[in-house]
Length: 598
Image (spheres, rainbow, N blue to C red):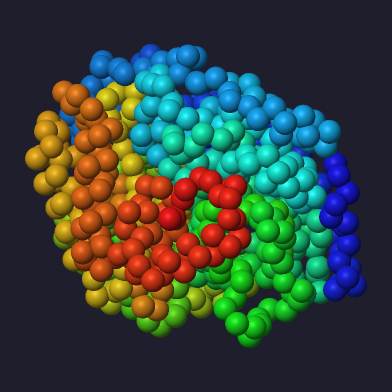
């Protein structure tokens, strides 16, 4: 460890410094999949008995048999567990490293660890877009990968690396958790300079906690689950829980303007950040004051938030923290249809009584979630579940092919949570909603962390799947959801997809003036010559439909290289010009040359 960031806080009477053994080891590929999502020991599979199960011991679903998943999978996609498409590793798919020897020699003198081994390089050559994972599984040759990987231990190490990169005209691509779904980590194939992946994973300390002002100063390479675990040990939390929080990093959250599942209580990342330290080719950007708000011209932080690694490396962040909530309670509500559910969420937002998390799943996601229910051994439990289903579908008249479910999470002091809970359920009742229990709410919330593993299962059986998101004003939510689903179905048919695709959506975040909508779509690609190209054209059409229906280019995934063709349409030519001017000043030689955004 270097000593560049001293563990003290001049603003507080009492401070705490923490060091960490990261959940994700070094090197990462020892426990992480090289060609899919998450941990190597965790995956969905169909076992020898033909039953679906989720392996490993890391999740609540781990080790459980899922008796309904195979039927749902085969019936939904026209797939068969007898037709597999297993992955194939092709070591020759990694092009040889093109090193800048002068840079390497100077880097050796600093003592900062680095590698140009093929497995280290290819692991950081991609995020988790469909085409990236498909290429890995199919053993296809990468046009360009990083030529080497470097692991700074602290802010001063990053300063040294950036200075050497400028000296030797080396291209740097910051790498945090690697969870990007916007092609942000792909190396530009036209880049002729030596490309260095700057992996921040060893910058994972909480440098101090200021208990007086309830802020923490944290190195930006820390991943979400480690940050929360460390803070929890001292009685605090950030409350920031993006779907990828197990593996995504604090610096990545800043660089993409991330959003969390509990933003209704804790805010999005831009609401949590007090101070950011960034190393650029021109020097270090940081404010002189850590006050909660300043009127000093445009906020410099907003040049960094969402900059996607194009201006520099986020090294340290001061962010708000809160005491761990006294009380936490899950819940769920069943509505007769999607329209009723959206109307309820709109009213909850209008009355500003949204719980920490409120998510509305459409019927397709409800059916999917039901297929993931574990096997129940208790006769009594089966009996109770049967009674619930009878009450909802027969007595109340809900159509099983129309009903939708909202999952809820309340946090705070016990009395306030219970009052809040009653208010939300009373609103839900006015829109025909029925309380569906804590277990369903908790299961729906936790499934967020395992749903990404399902794409890997699909790809084992000729099914490709992807997700994308948008934000949209309330009065356009229903039209946008309907039109995007119809457009996907139409495009799949026109492009020769032989099986009915799955198209589904959920409303995941609510605001005064609108909501975030998250889409999933998947299809069986058997019979297609180029399934990835087909998928990309369908997704392109879906994005066009989103924009035509008043949706944003992105709510929290970011732009990367995947969506930058729409930037002028989204923020105007003048807006793009302003961003380009900032880039040209801060990084005139394009040292941070990932070519995201612009």
